[in-house]
Amino acid sequence: MAPSQPCPEPMRILNIIQCSNLGGMEQASLRLMEALQRRGHALSVVSLHPLGPLAPALLASSIPALGLGYGQVPLWRWLRRLRRELRRQAPDALLLTGHSLPALLAIAGGCHGRLVLAIHFHHTGVKPRWFWWLFYAIATRQFRAITFPSHFVRREAIALYPPLAARARTVRNPLTPPALITPAARLQARRELGLSPEGPVVGNGGWLIPRKRFDVFLQVAARVLAHQPQVRFVIAGDGPEAASLKTLARELGIERSVHWLGWQVSMEPVYAALDLLLFHSDWDAMGLTPIEAMARGLPVVASVLHGGLREVASTPAVAVVLEQHDPEALASHVLRLLSDPAAAAALGSRGRRQVLALSDSEAIASWHERALADPAPLVPPADPLP
Image (cartoon, rainbow, N blue to C red; front, top):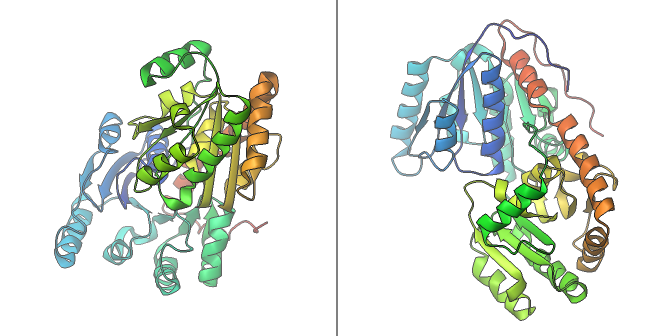
């Protein structure tokens, strides 16, 4: 990422976002908008779906937001409403966040080429190949640049539609540097969450779905508890796998040591309560939870089969990231770090420096300014893939 440069003339930037939940895509998009605001630009949001839990955060940041009724009204009426809103706002530049084909068609011809498309999701198993081929065939004719949060997901996209390579860029998700977790903050967070103030706490958060592999989390927990029964494990989140995961915890005999926190409006108290983050995933473009944990100085132990996390947690000196879900090996790393607080603190400190260096919100906002500014040269071809 190039260093921050002087701002161009202030722009009115419309961000059309797929939905306004509290997932990684939405939170990364919010941080980008806030950074662009700090640089003097006016931001607004149109959510393709009705406004969701992100709405209060948008309001707090003075970002006007409108939710459309995708899936609740006939498609022709939804398209007409989106086009009408585009004409009404007449933005200087446009961000499209997400892989909505109807939105791609609706904005055709808007903003005279001052458009950037942000794809935050992996491709395999999400949509059929023909969808991605068609989506990127249209997008490469409309957008100045198409961004991905990791080389991994960019590589996926180029394999699906090779001409995309000329406009594809890896642009990391921005982070605002959070404060380090203090002992007082940890104690307060544990009180808020109903956790014991004493003893180590290991946790994770996210949508309880199969690819997030919370079953591996519980299997690792069982192995850790066999050696250190005082450790407590917390899971923040909910989803269709919740009931089966709670059954697994009972079968493993660890139900008394696992705390189910449900959905959290903010993950701040969860991160503050932890001594270590334990993360697993089969597929992820770039897991937000371990990145946010590293930014707060928490040591991270993870296993990811397919994803971009290893690009940021690039060496064992900044985080433990295994390429296989190996509960025994993962438990060994957790036990080692819990028994050596100095080593855990050093790992967390190095991880924080690494993440914040790669996710500087001002540099990322500056890049978007240059991509959206008019007149401006086309964004150059993508950096060579490793």
